[in-house]
Amino acid sequence: MTAIQREKMDYDVVIVGAGPAGLSAAIRLKQLDPDRSVVVLEKGSEVGAHILSGAVLDPCGLDALLPDWRTMDAPIKTEVKEDNFYLLGPAGQIRIPNWPMPPLMNNHGNYIVSMANVCRWMAGVAEGLGVEIFPGMACSELVYEGDTVVGVVAGEFGRDPETREPGPSYEPGMELRGKYVFLSEGVRGSLAKEVIGKYQLSNGHCPQKFGLGMKEIWEIDPSKHREGTVTHTMGWPLGKNAGGGSFIYHLENNQVYVGFVVHLNYANPHLYPYMEFQRFKHHPMVADLLKGGKRVAYGARAISEGGWQSIPKLVAPGVALLGCSAGLVNVPRIKGNHNAMLSGKAAAEAAHAAITAGRARDELAAYETEVRSGPIARDLKKVRNVKPLWSKFGLTASLMGGGLDMWTNTLGFSLFGTLKHGKSDAAATGLAKDFQPIDYPKPDGKLSFDRLTNVAFSFTNHDENQPAHLVLKDPSVPIAVNLPKYAEPAQRYCPAGVYEVLGEGQDATFRINFQNCVHCKTCDIKDPSQNINWTTPQGGGGPNYPNM
Ligand SMILES: Cc1cc2nc3c(=O)[nH]c(=O)nc-3n(C[C@H](O)[C@H](O)[C@H](O)COP(=O)(O)OP(=O)(O)OC[C@H]3O[C@@H](n4cnc5c(N)ncnc54)[C@H](O)[C@@H]3O)c2cc1C
Ligand code: SF4
Image (cartoon, rainbow, N blue to C red; front, side, top):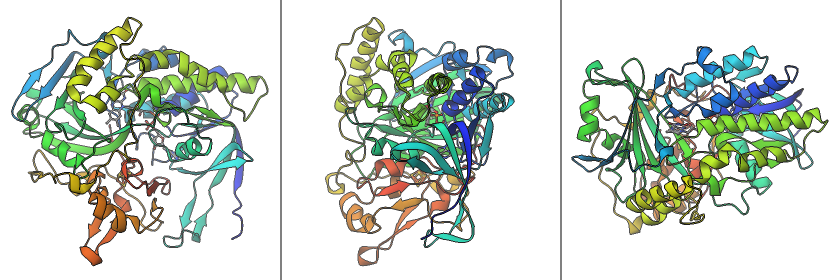
């Protein structure tokens, strides 16, 4: 095969992903030196199209990056007024009072936002400073020189759907080269995964842990809408089957964000996270709120949950991991946007100092030091034992032990030291024969919806004339291994119904409806055989989220 020739463009810093981490880095680089050349590449059809977050935003990241944001017409208007926490049973709920909660759990001073809209606004700020932003440009490959990352390939189109070789309308895309490449792809970034593997950045750290977050936007009866109200629940319907919980955030315009997170370390391969979410909406407390309303959007995205123990080494020659590509979420607070912004700012400052000193393509050690000793470290260290306690001892132990540990950490010491995470989420999957299948009620079409109907509300779309971006390392594994051992859980864990087993016995086949994919990355994480590799589809494909 002849080598592919590509046009090359040189920048000071090449940034992959226009989320809060990447955009913060771009803004900070231009604040420090308006002449710095900075490019941001985004696979979504526009900035924000692939952004899915809760979101209650702790503004500390934005305060550090853009101290005047309150006068800059930011789409950050709804202050949190009320914080509720409930433990659900099948027919009722117990309200957990706010007073035993550690202060860090308090949402006072935070805002309910659409992070998709916040990113659209941040992109405008970045462009105003001279940053080049190219949406619809999926970064499909890293470019190396020797052992150093020197750039990325973006905007490749037209490979043959069957052979994966350049087809008749092939466009090779461009090679964008930088003195530094920032990977801010969010959770389970495909290039970040390659870099973590190649440079063994996770050695000496716990495996990253994940959850699957699913979210709907509802327009509800105005008489039930209480702007600024934040509600979190735990318990039913997951019970002992899995860890997780819900969020209900009342934003503006009678809209409510209803979301549900399932920790991906669950053992029972019959568990169906999407159906758990649908069932949750039938709880009397939730059903009362949603009755008479309508669901206007749906989406899903994995969330990193490993926290402090799982942060890999953040730098390798020429490249740095930012935001959720490094897993900077504070799990009990379900917040990562502030740390994504702080990491973007820190990486930009390290790159600026390095380039000013005449350096290029080395390791940005100053960035690593800042993340491990600055505000991100202070935020994540305090909560580092909550997730391992939950995984090992369940919800009650994590509420009590984790709560106490967060209190003592606030005072400067920990009861448990630093607990380790167990196996990877893929390895935590148990054998189908050891668990009972779960009988889920059929969606009623009013409060709950079947998966494919809901996927239409993610507005996802992929050109069919391209190779499937979900690549099986060994195509025989789903039917030969996963089906007999795990009842092929891809059929259930995918929140978009991409994977299907058709037929039975000798006739069983595995189908991948890649057009439906919403880029949540769960299959790449949870497949027990680690046989699915999520790669980038052609740019512009994927969900088209409105105000997620
Ligand atoms: C259900 C859910 C609820 C959450 N709730 C909250 C909350 O209430 N508060 C909070 O603070 N945090 C919350 N989080 C966490 C928060 O959303 C993340 O911490 C945050 O999005 C991380 O920002 P990021 O910039 O690292 O990545 P992202 O926001 O994921 O952005 C990454 C961007 O990179 C693009 N990209 C990825 N790969 C490529 C590629 N190869 N080429 C080109 N573009 C690429 C993506 O399309 C995307 O636009 C929640 C997360 C989930 C899933
Ligand atoms: S195919 Fe994978 S990445 Fe796409 S929606 Fe399904 S689980 Fe998520």
